Image (cartoon, rainbow, N blue to C red; front, side, top):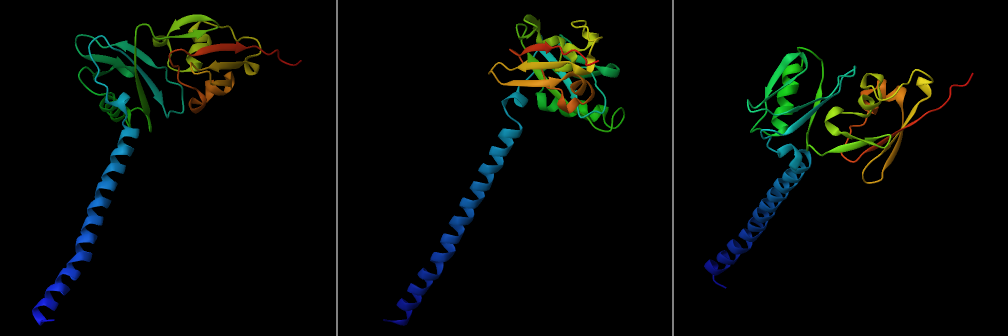
Length: 208
């Protein structure tokens, strides 16, 4: 075999690992990008990408606080804004839920709170839940405790308050038994109200 032919073969063989390595690198990059996009899709799903329009009913719940802060439900007006606690006005029309949640957090932290996890849900005018078998609009309450507290005017818990339990049945049939005293004091234990929820009070008599 002539020297130049041998050298040519060596060059071809030598290039092959480089080509394979480059191909694997590109494949890994595409895989990493695909995984990143998958994570982003989970974190910033379709709900967060929704664009708010005039007349949308916007419900804002406030999580991550040491105290209970009632949810606010407002229809986005023709001025494109809603007003939340402490008279804070937010432009919402034409913007995504994710953007507005970020703005709310930045506005309240750290001026009013050390931490805040706002949650926005767009409601339809016919979105309802059931409290003791009676249909209620989802716009009146953000969490279970807001439905059953005396402030809501639905139920009198003057007797046996600490013994009261709440049965929450989701639209898909999933059931939870909650203690009123716990959901009232701990926001992390206070589930969000969703369309189709059914809520019942389980009264227990205090032991003498």
